[in-house]
Image (cartoon, rainbow, N blue to C red):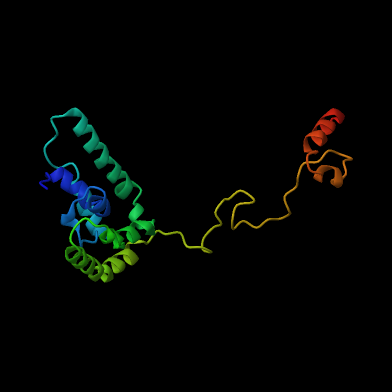
Length: 184
């Protein structure tokens, strides 16, 4: 497929999506480089190239470029989110029947051979992943997983009601009406 420089720059920053969802099999066997330098180079060429004559196509491409600038430039998710690195390592796309088995097997082998460098890059790049148990505690509401509970959760009860009454099946509505009637 003949891609211009702007589309190629978007595809270079979204290799798994380009290969699997757009069907660009020129990326078969390729593991996207998410190292700091590679992402910087990729961001530098985003938007470089001719503008589209169709306003819709231009707006769509410009939005994709801006989304990548935010994802990798402003938020630097490749430094925080291990799932991005896991996605580029995933060889399961070669299980689909899109090409002869021999071609898919070779692409899978090439892909897997690139793992050591990709894993080294991931370890170096993921320098902003929050580490559990270090730093200040994260502000979480009581009751969230990992938050110590100081006391068991309470059910609202009206003053003077017996716990037996509030636990009877089918009586919860009656109990609430009586509580509100008594002002409790």
